[in-house]
Image: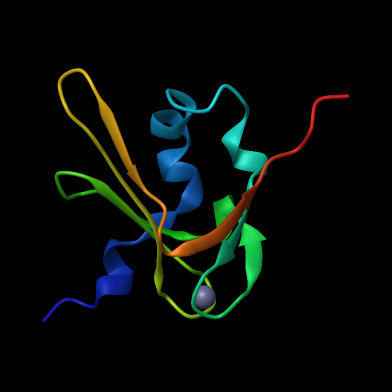
Length: 91
Ligand SMILES: [Zn+2]
């Protein structure tokens, strides 16, 4: 059986897709995990992008911190696994 970690990319793998939703550079986003409370850069999350949607898992505890999928005319976000997404403010 293949190790799921072999399929994971870093969080930068979803930056392009999230850029369609958030009008900021999402590579600077910090995500707080709802399970373990750790706050880490999005780029350090484990990104699984080979399914019909993408899944982001916490770098610390591997709990799901976000899911998203793109349909024909919509992007679906499920951020229930995260307590917060921190964006850098524009001065
Ligand atoms: Zn966690």
